[in-house]
Length: 612
Image (cartoon, rainbow, N blue to C red; front, side):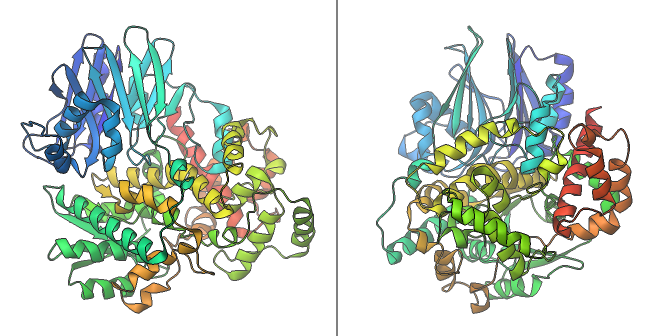
């Protein structure tokens, strides 16, 4: 795992600044090379071939800088008879590309973002993995082109100007959609894409090399028994590969859920005395007893990490600033603390990321498995609008009443408002009351993509899962864990995002994922052979974030100081009267929604503070 950056006509005096900004991603080695007007920068976290894996790496007029891991690279070396000097997957990747071009990408199982300078054909190639697990951003305008693993690093190379339209998008989503960033002419390199930048013509050609929609549109006819065996086999293979391709010890995050528990069960087959880590936070649900059952069953070297938010007020700005953009997800805070604690024990950790989006792990998937709420139905919407006005506002996030209330509320909506109410639900129902600009221009990109997906011959469940993969997983969850882990020089590996599972899970029948009210049904059935019975029906919890307590107590003074100022950046987008009433708790909305809105604006203020 590493950090990469580079581009055309990079100011040499800024190279050290870029390396410093990427240091935590690559503390073991920082190197750069400049050929003519092209600079390539690499910072290395040594995990594979610690002794000989230095980058940039050159072979036959090609130079590569690579961030990520190719888990099946040794198998591919053997398959294609590659003559390699090192044991590094970087060399495998470069030689495969030289020999087979972009067609070889389909055979890679891994997480990756890399750049290759093709000196022979005078072009620069950039590639990103299927899900977008490894980050990559780029700036492109006129004859200026540069890229980096983090926005904070890209800012060291070139000046970035704020795009106000995209700030409105952040306020609705809590993050930026698809290629968008908070800056003009600056983009999040799309997942499953390859780009060629011509050094002769200064042109950029971006093409898709992988698309998950293709697999949703080509359903498997496998019966449940066959599907179960395949998922189990693919997960076993994914875990095995992610353990074997590391010169350093690999552990697992072990929560009270079935995803990480299954990963731990499979990892224990290949690793004696596996290190496992469970965390608990003061004042929240404690998963330690459940995790301890799995640790005991598989005789792991188990560690219970007690995490406190006592220093949150002192840490909060640094944690948020690591993202280089306004980033709403409050679970980024415990994710940071967990990664920091785990780094004290090892450098590589397996997690359960991607299981919920591929196998239907969220409660919101249950109603969509019965009915396609994205289909326009005027009668349904009218009746739901009438009914929702008669119901008292919900204030308990995890309650059954809250679930019903939100279900009726989303039933009253149409199109993108239905999706946003189902997912982030930050300013939904109040954005017209709150926003200075009532235009939905900031949602144009998403609206276009939403309409395309909504027209596909897919079930409501598949549409929702496809949207979540392209929005929440890509723009929120993978970003959150990448920054949380890498800001602590910890590598996170996600077996559920293996090539095989990414390409098989979308093809199986809906009722293998949602059975009645049971989420992740196929994984729960697999778990019966590996986990204590109490695990099988455990609901998804995630980190229990005490957001209302942070907003109303722990960080109240800090948040009010940022938002009550007449110079608050948020006032460029939010009506002052609305913000004042929100701070004084005089708006009739759910207490959880109030906390989410205040947190969203607070994060925006911290980001902007670092811009000025």
